[in-house]
Image 1: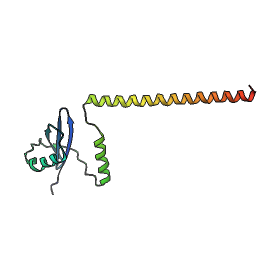
Image 2: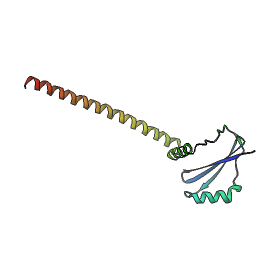
Image 3: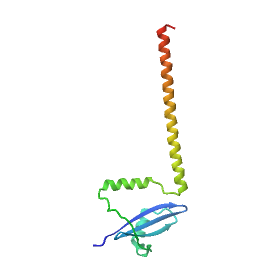
Image 4: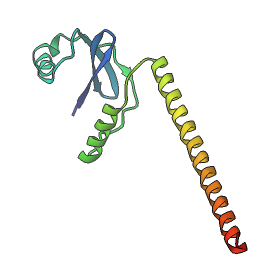
Amino acid sequence: MNKISGTLTVYFEKPFWICVFEQVDQGKVSVSRIIFATEPSDRQIWNYILYHYQELSFSSPVEANIRPAVKNPKRRQRAVKKQMRTKIGTKSQQALQRQQEQNKQERSQKDRERKALEKEKKYQIKQQKKKKKRKGR
């Protein structure tokens, strides 16, 4: 039995919204791309699939390593949430994102060190006060 599966990805690439249809048939992937001017609603995408799917011009099939679909619905739900969190952008945007993350980690490291120094300093002051008390000063 021949099984054909497909996925739809919608993302924003300035200044347009792009829908990418991927069709997998016998281990070969073919892709079609649709461009929307404004952000498409779920209803618009659904109607497009229902009424214009036959008009899509898919690329020539390319061999691909396709893993079998995951059966667990909770795992699929987590994967969808993860995909929603990841941002699709240019390489420069991704580089800026990595740089911000790195700066954030460096800043938190410095804050931890500073807090540890302050804690040590307070401890030393407390110890000096204890010694003064014992000496009766």
